[in-house]
Amino acid sequence: MALLMLMQSRGCVWTCLTVIRRNLSSSSALLAPPKPNSKLTFFLCQRFHDVEQMISWSSWLKSWTLRRKNVYYSYTQSEYGDNIAAAFYILSMKGGFRFAGQSDWFRTNYRGKFSWDFVNFPDVPIEEVDMSRTLINYSGLNNLVSQQGLRSLSLRGCPEVDDWFLSRLHIYQDTLEKLDLSHCPRITIGGLASLHHLRKLRRLELSSLPQLQSPGLVRILLEEVLPHCNISGVDYREGLTETNTHIDKQTDSEITQLTEEHTHTQGPHRQTLTQ
Image (cartoon, rainbow, N blue to C red; front, side):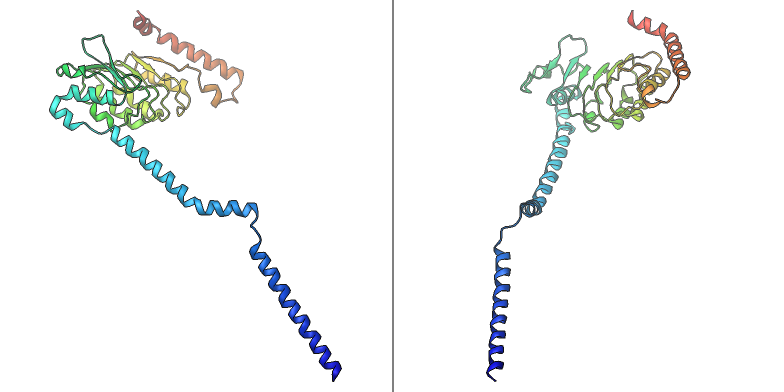
């Protein structure tokens, strides 16, 4: 009897020790600091929604700014006429222009400020426009469609100029003589194909167009549809050897012969342009 009672008391002691040990282990696990990896994961999980909202807000702000800059100045057009409205839009985009019959250009300074003297020429159309490195897009072109006497347009380095923009330049098919599309990252061959409407075009700059596949071939095709246009910034062989690295020497010599013959056939009108 005494032995049984001793064994039961020992069992109770071991049971109590086991329970205490489990409680201590569980409490230590709760009080232990998290590992560095879990800290980073917890932080990202808590902040990811805020980062996503910030990116979404930044994208919305960029889109809103682009729409605001390219809004159609209908009030200015109704109050001051087409020429003044177009001039104000160009200067507000930090571009430059020259009125027909004048040698001086109207431009903004390094702070984006400009002179308001252009309001003194409400009846004089704009002949040359320089929108280089501005945010002009398809919608902003609404402010320039009234300038039917436009002869020169520079869009050098404009990030929002795309194929849709080029397709709308047909409105200048009877006047535009010079067009600069260099360093425009969104232009493809689809947009350049729409330039065949510009029958008066004499100079076309196409250097540094990253979306353009086989620029040399594109130049040859453009010269077929614009035989009187001097296309610069693209070599005839540019993009041909890069896209066809497997061609042998015989094929390479044939390409050289074809480009030389094409240059020879295009020679007379080029000499006339340079003279």
